[in-house]
Length: 301
Image 1 (cartoon, rainbow, N blue to C red):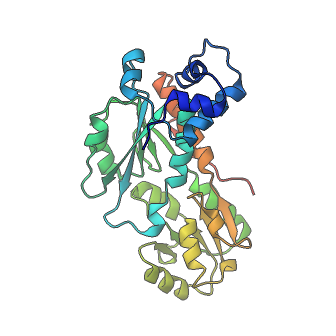
Image 2 (cartoon, helix red, strand yellow):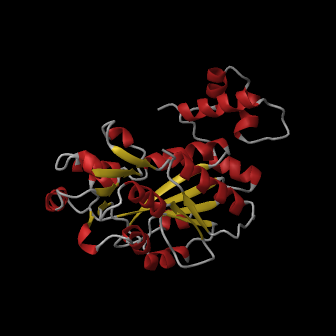
């Protein structure tokens, strides 16, 4: 496959190679209008342009690399595989506009290893859905500014960004003032799971493990209304229960999977990516925010 060059981008965008170079290297002393900058960045993204990181590092003494670590389970189920796809895509678009590149790595929830990340010169690291005990083992190996995503960690030193699940569930309970059941995506972080499950009776909660288990739980609660977190799980649930009986809290950016009549509370991955990027850029610039927890609210209905 041919390596995309600045010349290729310049030809497609209808500008000079020098202009492309100024934009991709974030030369703010050059007067280039916003539309031209956006066009160049859009073309670079569409052509899958990969910059020469080594050359950039030598010139700027910065790698412009941001690492992202996803903690995966031993055997990921379909509703788990696409949890962060939309978020990473949205985040990557923001980082590219600011001349950063994303290094993606996964590590096992059973045997966490981050050698690929820890050996690189990174400007920042994002750690997604991590258990509390695992977090401290991994964080000691990371020297770059670190932001924890979808994890509630009792440590004021680190910044955390997560969905405001409590607010989403409260919105649903204001509509349905009755005892509801909960079917939830199973996050690795125990404290996040505790926050999600608070306010529900233990017998009324099902942490998604299998389609068969979901079917049995819904049949047992066929007379009730409830809340389902993760639209992939919601789509499966509609096979076994009338979808008018539950709200779906959409977190994957795939609410299109649901029928138009289905009740939803939607979280925007674009909004979440923007919140993460804003905190990351502050940390890279050594601007420290006293607010260490950032809760991303659901979209307004």
